[in-house]
Image 1 (cartoon, each protein chain N blue to C red):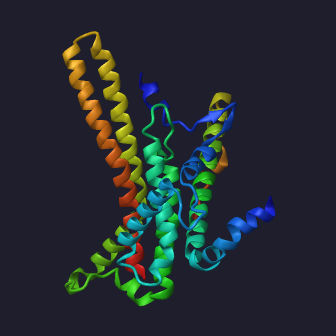
Image 2 (cartoon, rainbow over the protein chains, first blue to last red):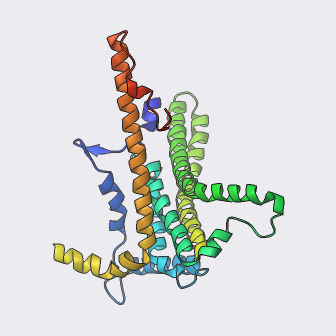
Image 3 (cartoon, rainbow over the protein chains, first blue to last red):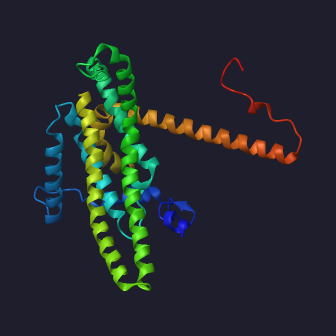
Length: 226
Length: 75
């Protein structure tokens, strides 16, 4: 039972070959490229959604920050689509792997920090000391701010991993409980089934929210450094 | 195929890869350095555990000298 619970998080392989790369690349097929001036309904809806998201996300940025528009939109689309596809039964979700999320978080966070150090060195270094700090507290606060800076990529990755993994585990557990209770008590099984449906709706929301939170935080780190 | 790849991917993305994402390439370099350090430490500790296990199975043999080796130059 315990082994089965975590089996869905193991990296999949087919005939001995790892197919994680194919699974990671799969969501890009679901976003068709606009090829005409006036496209079909699906592509038009896709363009409208991307425009809505990019307008809202890039409103706070200056010209330098807006060069990251393609990266931020790709990020939210990739994480959102990967999380949603992971809600299909028996599918593998790449964003449950900490290695994958660290692989996204570290380069993007480091990119924002290096951008800040390169173009606005003094302002970037000034972030280590909040305005109005009392003199005796300065050394301690600089240490605290440095630690909070280096924790940012870890928090980004672990937040996404933990939320998606926890949701999938809960669905497994409550689904298993529903099946086990069918023979014991139909009423309890029905209540558990209702809880499972509500949890699945919650997981749909969490999938999209976590994609938005990841991208928004990267956007905020970029805004601090540009 | 390569020509098609260059025309459809490299040509539109060139300003991003060469100018906009310079800092992200540096971040990817940092990440690959972290991955390398973690992997090599893991390999070293697994090799160490294997040697200790082999020496303890041999019975009564001297503990390998690199068990006591540290990074500190004073050691």
